[in-house]
Length: 333
Image (cartoon, rainbow, N blue to C red):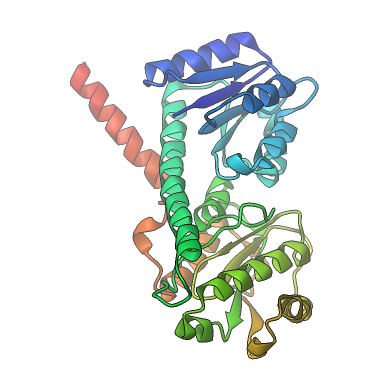
């Protein structure tokens, strides 16, 4: 795994690099500023797999750098771990909104760093498998006709759509939050009538319509604090973490209007039976991440999605890693 460490303290970079080398990682690059990091990223032939960014830096801070990295197409899915001091923890929500996936508190402990990197590796491996599936899907659409099988449960991600993430990243965003209640809205957005395309085996039109809906959601839902994923079966999951309450019926009216215009522009007038339905997964205004994940997983499970591809809660992963580390240390003593 290729790792980049960005911090304006050389001593800290040396410390983290040494810890990573002890863990067996040798392909490590470092930068002392956001500008240097972006220059290094641009000069790489092989993309980095994981980033560790200090939040408080002179000039471009870690949050700004995180947003710049996340805007690069090849890094839409890369784990970005923020390094924060006690005084900078208040900025973590901004970091998550910018695309961060995890954080480490200073001073860094080797055991915690190991656990976070292990979790990042799990995410990288999962996303790589997902990317392979997406490449296979694109190859299928390009090399075959509409006639043929198409798995209704296929999850699709369009990397150029800003607020769209694969399902694992949406879950990961919740897993990164502390377990206190947040003002959030959980929605399911369904393209009803889409089963007609499945029956007619119209793969190209199916993907085109899903892409159209994703574009509409990206423009319609609040851009700050919103993440959505296509989870198969013509359904999207939308997570919105904002203070203002979202009214599902009002949002439904807005996206339905935009959808009708989109179908007309695409020349899909023969699919007038298609429409978008927006449903709240919970009527509660304040939800803890644990409750939200439970609601989403129950909804995903009801669709027949593959449960074995869901990432486990971070706490359980850490417990397992700590037990393995303690066991290994006990054997060497």
